[in-house]
Image 1: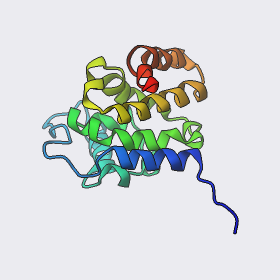
Image 2 (image 1 turned 120 degrees about the vertical axis):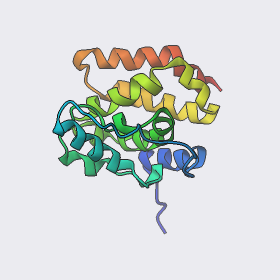
Image 3 (image 1 turned 90 degrees about the vertical axis):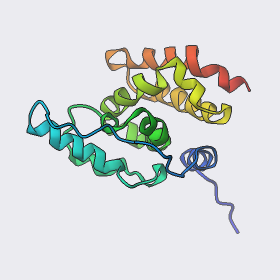
Amino acid sequence: MPLLRLSNQEIYRKKLLKEFSTKLPSGDLFLPILDTYGDLSDEENFFKQRAIFHEKKWHEVNFDDSKEFNFDWGPFSALSKLGEIYYLPAFLSYFYEVENLKKGNIGDYFDSIFFSVLGNKEATESFTIEQSKLIALFLINLSNLVDDTYGAEQEYQKELTSNWGHFLLF
């Protein structure tokens, strides 16, 4: 009987499932619904973004569903800080796969989560050492695979070096 080998993506996803709780946290995962938006398309985008996550655990989120939407900003824009941290493993799992990195929307997705969670030194305190290792592995993968448009690769390398890379030593 031949041995079945798991892909790096499958191994990574199994580790995410082990290290990040799938239980929905108590508290507001979404930003409040505002009464006023710049225009109707902003309100529609907000609800489309929210629908990606609404009533789903992080491992049930499918970003393929969002490809049809024309986001002016990434889908994480509808999430509160608690929501960004809870749904982070969905993002890590999806974009760890090279094919999804090549689909092109990495900038919109990454920018919306990067600066509030991954690019925030205080955010490292929200994660265990094992979770932080998985985040660091993701950043290594991302910095090696994404093209250097607008200096993005350098930004990912900087965060890896200054905030997340030391977790790989443990």
